Length: 258
Ligand code: HXC
Image (cartoon, rainbow, N blue to C red):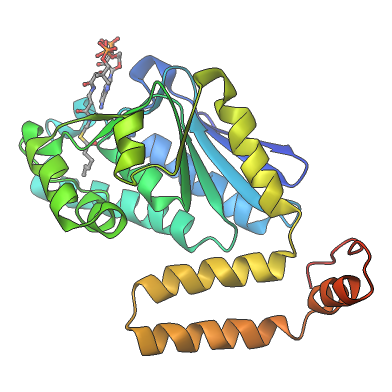
């Protein structure tokens, strides 16, 4: 893949968007590469958790403005559809995805981080939705995911004013979950990823699914999703092993993820 790299450390897949000369701006080629890499990640049974980051001083500085300037309305819609299907692949991936926001996360970059399950930011991160200033709305999910993550009023303010926030404010408003010194970003993201990768993965994946699906549903439907997932976990060998280990006052043995 020319623009998106995948490496594996233990059970963690590290996906790096690599178009540093354009601050990792997303054009159709980058989006297609990202989609192909996430298809690969979904199929790879050795990968339990994913860390997504950008090469150089930017996570993603947005959709590619040079590609968008002369697009027609139909081309704009097609471009948004390509990004939306790619970001939904991340959201719907059974495995958890952590965004390690290493710098600019603007426009489509902020939207990409919000499609991930968790966000850790470097102190150097700068995050926002500048689209309205370019005469467009956010088009890769920003108007929908941002209010779900940080609430209506704050999302409205940031999207309409296009004000960018630094890492500390992003943390204060819940747009990122943790801020760490720049040189510790990948270590911290890996630490979080590894703490999830050692868990029984059926439970991890069912919990992600419940949170994701439940957030879109009414409380009765959402609780039914949870009961179903909870019940399903009772059929796993890992549940039996972890509960037996607790009762027998010993460490749980290697999980089988089934
Ligand atoms: C294309 C971009 C780009 C972008 C940066 N570059 N962002 N190219 N699309 N979104 C390119 C620059 O043109 C430049 O190329 C190189 O990357 C380095 O950028 P500089 O501007 O020289 O760096 P700096 O002065 O440090 O400023 C960094 C920056 C600024 C603050 C991030 O680049 C910036 O404001 N970029 C645009 C951010 C933005 O508006 N993003 C939202 C896009 S709209 P050269 O060749 O000159 O070296 C969007 C919509 C999503 O995302 C939905 C669409 C449907």
